[in-house]
Image (tube, rainbow, N blue to C red; front, side, top):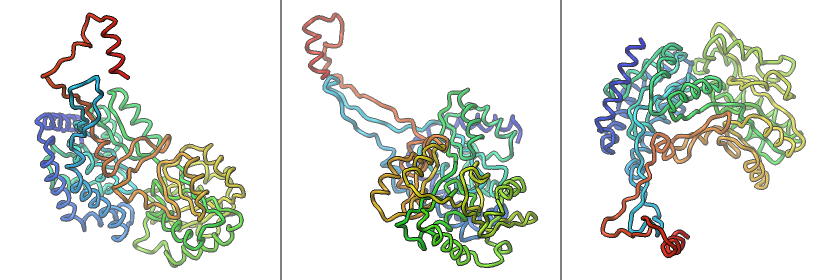
Length: 459
């Protein structure tokens, strides 16, 4: 797409927003219903696109992508009228007689930039929230998932006019052209490095942004954990989408007392969940491209492999891999893995482990397996992280009732449900002052008597 075409799209969206049609909550409800109908209409094509881009099977494509978006739409349809209402707040007596309230208002034209790893869900979830809040949306899906980008474009074109929701496909040139535009809000999901560039570019126009990034999300398994269940849930979370998940367990910290039992349980679970001849399974996903395949294979220290450790570059698949007795100095600990490699680090002292995690950039997620309430309180209160689970992995992002987002280098801002609606809304603070009374105290000239009364009212 040319720069001129992008400019024309944004100009049309700006003009359409100014018409005010999206301010009507009933209009938004109709729009969300049309989007849901379009998704269901092209559901099979969505699964085909996800398989073409990432080798995802239909089941994983459903519960990790399509179902998540449908659930977000349904949640918004149930709650949008309540979210959009004015919220009455307390009025100080000094403002007598008046009514004070907060009014959610759409920003205007929103840019949603999405990644390739969950290319449908991580594109359409923020689109749902932005539409519910009353914005027009320009969508920029990842160039690394071209088949899914095409079906997203098809779904949106089926449901909406271009002036309301537009999809811009392409690569770096299109990204740069979009970031030159004067959007009212930018929502970006992707890597830390690109997130920094987006933030820098947005600052030139003073555009508010949300950044959904990543990082090394730790798992702590203490000596009181249910080891077989912990292994089952960690294996599920780690190798889902072959590890290409922003909230995937990145590395496992296991208490020395249960280390051997945990490693054996993980081996058993990998065999149970994936079986033999893993690389030839049609529904076992692949690494997105050769660059990432080579990077991941370079992180595997064969001397520490206890499971897997091999891949096939021709089909871009890497077997579920476990590295044992890993140290913080190993290559696999120097960057976010974003692949099917599970490093296991043995720890002795929980307090020292907490201090180590706190010395690293704030993770997007943290997972803790324990049966001790005091450990839960200590870990969750002392470590700064985006979100997480106790005795499970991944599932905290699967509910619209809780916000999802990072902190520090793992991101800023959140979305899903009410928080998603508020992310794409500016909250106007309004005082409706009545005209039947006008106290003279605030007006000049001032004197000692007025000052005394003002101080009484302002307490």
